[in-house]
Image (cartoon, rainbow, N blue to C red; front, side, top):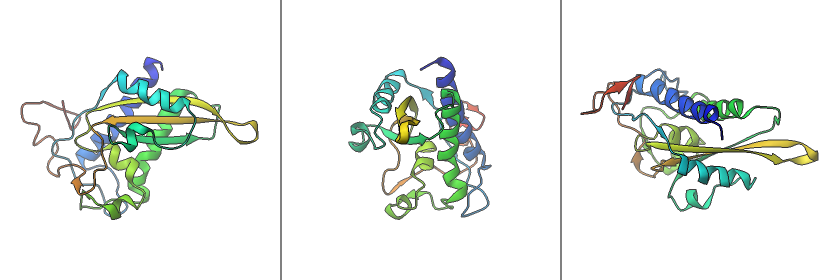
Length: 189
């Protein structure tokens, strides 16, 4: 994983979180997602990256043991264009996960319920889960059907999101509950 790919993953994740924190993210179930009062800026963790990279290299489009045991949150993407660079794959994956808000929607009620989980917005909710503070991602080129390759993308998250009956994030004016932390682009740093 190059620094450029790491930076793209981190920049895209934090850009999405900023848009949500500012109240500028379009939500299909309402005009915009509510502002977030204390959305933390994510940090990149190379130990988590190692775990994500190892899972991506298995080329199996299913969640890892670390995700199913709830040690880490996890988003997966499978891209069918093998000519993409890893930077392009990072960008497209995060965009696809974020698009769940615009295409499916969450609404103003930000409790992560089992019924919300069944709607297909889990990638988006993990992206903006307030208690998540660190990410690490991995990418691999994998064999596909008819000798075509595909790209498998895995991002893992510390603290895992999508916990049933927990709040996705706290609603309120952006950065209004950062406390001692400073505000940067709508995120608590």
